[in-house]
Length: 144
Image 1 (cartoon, one colour):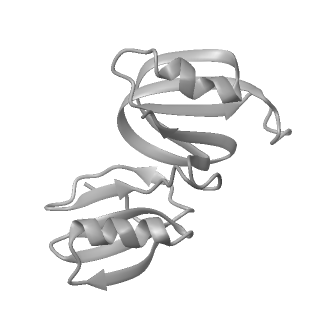
Image 2 (spheres, helix red, strand yellow):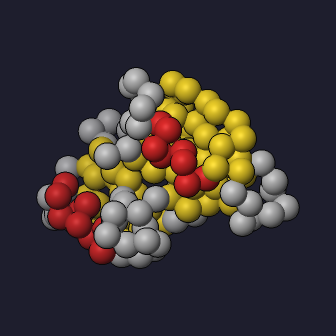
């Protein structure tokens, strides 16, 4: 599987683990596609639906030791919704979703598109990833 577009770099002869390490070490990288030794990095402007691609592995890159990359800023992750809660404080979304059965992803979107610093919005807890949408003022991440 993959998400088409946003390709900005390609390396050959790497292992899947090496490909993930290259993505994590590059601040421009949000995701990577790995197919039989070919590693394609995807930029932070990634926006699209997951589609089938033979033998392809799609990986998303977060760095929990880096405040800038510990979640996907300005992106909504979409998919099968296990729970949705409006009027939620932005910093409470991941904690709330960690209590929802089958949820593996959290995604928060502001209620006020004119105020990117708004702290109230809609929290979605997702069990299966289907898409990544560029959405200013939002953020998403994986539950750990």
